[in-house]
Image (cartoon, rainbow, N blue to C red; front, top):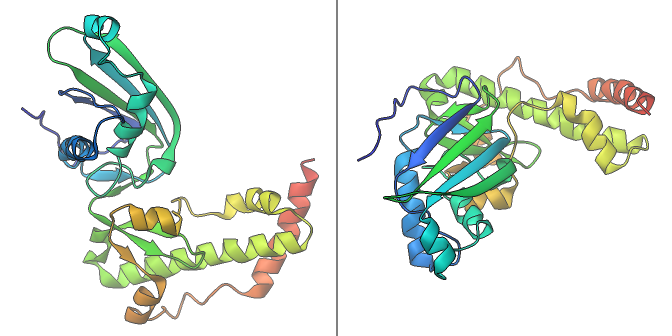
Amino acid sequence: MLVPIDPAWRPAFGGLRHEFRFDPLHYGVGGEQQAAFKARMREELRRYGFLLTGEVQVSWRLLVDEQSRWESDTGADVDNFAKLLDDGLCGPDGILIDDVQVQSLQIHWEAAHGHPSFELTVHCHPDDWITRPASLYELGDGLWYPLPNSVWNTPEAAVHHIYFLDNWVLFVKHLRHQLRRRGLSPEMAFEAARPYGVTSRGFHSTRAAASGFPRVRRREWMTSHARPDDLPTPRNEEIEQAAVVTAQLFRGRD
């Protein structure tokens, strides 16, 4: 029996804990078993009313039969569990967009009697979530950003929001270009421009395509919705001025 979950609950204190009351599965099993296992995980996770969009710390606690683990060859090593368990967290019915969000990972097993189970603990930034369901939108930097479908409940505000985000990522993209022109390496330009970045992370096109989320290309949403008059594209003079100041500040740290 599934434990009730309030779909209105949000990780306001920066995390969640969830117990799966069935046997953990490792990555060495066949494809059909893997698919069924991930579907069972997501059946529980989809009851949460949100998706996490930022970097997370994930911990897995596996409760297994100790005798079977030590005295038979059926018990897999803990590292063989990690990949499949993390995969089960991702996608429209999971709680993550993609496992690239996993910044740190811990996994361990403990002896247990009775029915096997496993427990998930996630630590996250308390504001790095959106309401499910969601779609991925391509913005001007070529990355794909998650937006809740509910944003379109007020279409005018949604159009303003997505063009605002697009302007923001375009500004950062061109700023990094200007920083490289001023002698910063690509790695240094990325780091120097980070304070200007949007709070939500964008996902590479390959990861977006494999995520299972609905995707909306930039040309599609721009064709369907005209740019608001109060949101012109970023001006070159603003970008160049920011590049001069940012390059000076970045070099001044050394």
